[in-house]
Amino acid sequence: MNIVVGYIPSPEGLAAIDHAMAMAKLGDERIVVLNCGTRGNDADKSFAEAADWDAVDQKLTSMGLIHEMRQPAQARTPADEILGAAADIDADLIVIGIRRRSPVGKLIAGSTSQQVLLEAECAVLAVKQPPTAS
Image (cartoon, rainbow, N blue to C red; front, side, top):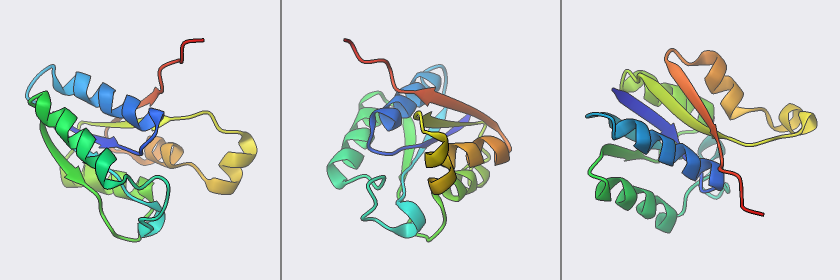
């Protein structure tokens, strides 16, 4: 099984990584972790800094999981990058983290997760961050 996971340095991004790892531990699955800034902008807050990126790589390595780390610099949208990576590796599953957004926020900023859910040729698992203890 080939798994693509969209990662951003956030609780939702970490939840996506954790779910992809759980799926990969079930067999000899391969994970491709994808992180990119919006339209190639590596100053974007969704673009993982080296420390965050290395921590994800080390986490997957320590679990003994077959994986590849991709931080493309193309000027495509994050959704297009995720869908492109899924097509490149003939993915069986895409894992993405989602967060609650207002209707106005969706209208103004668009929705990466919505595009991935609607256009993916394979199954998509959308995960929320775990609830925080009160």
